[in-house]
Image 1 (cartoon, rainbow, N blue to C red):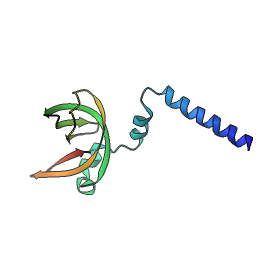
Image 2 (cartoon, one colour):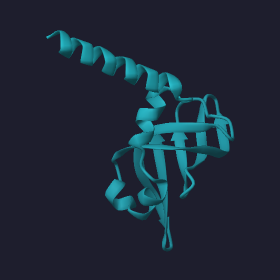
Image 3 (cartoon, rainbow, N blue to C red):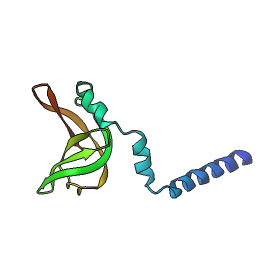
Image 4 (cartoon, helix red, strand yellow):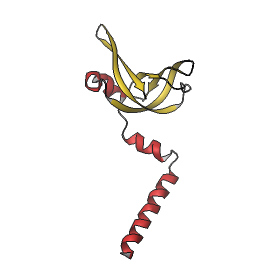
Length: 118
């Protein structure tokens, strides 16, 4: 019993040490492992339509009006439009977005895909 408790204590200390060593918060690290690739979302937009996803990227162009708005998010593979009812982040900020994928509309052979954050 004492060996089990000692092992668990060492494990917890190592885990805490790992997170303290990282430059990002533990929450951001855990979310990073489960983020979806924007290029994959756009290539398979019908599969992702109305599904919740988590994406991570850098904010590009943005438009904020009365505490809500739109911004372009780029994860290095592709970019996507994010619609938010929250404050719009600044250009250049790295953010993690949880939201629902919507195929907004088609124009010719192009699909406009939007993430509505929640």
